[in-house]
Length: 123
Image (cartoon, rainbow, N blue to C red):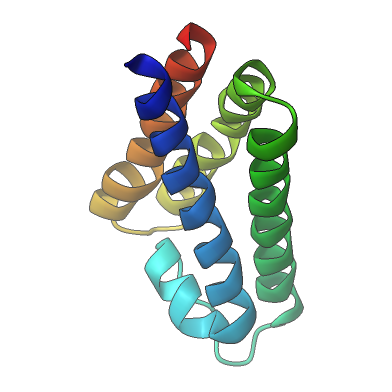
């Protein structure tokens, strides 16, 4: 019973990471605003593209681990991957972003990744 829940949550997480990556590649400025730190109009958009590519690549990696390596490897991916939204929480707070976004989006995502990791390790 636990295995379908573990894989289901992991698939949802991976799909969300893929969507975030695509959003940063296709609509970078709205994606940055949703991230919690809006991009400056005259700023270097290369950093937004870098974030999009990073997230897209991490999503593909997560999908590959789920498909080919199994629950244990995917659990490590989720556990280590939780560092990113924890860092994102600090970035949003440090740069004057809304606390609601920092904790309600980024910190909550880190918690979701940790839950997913625990479920995958237990599967």
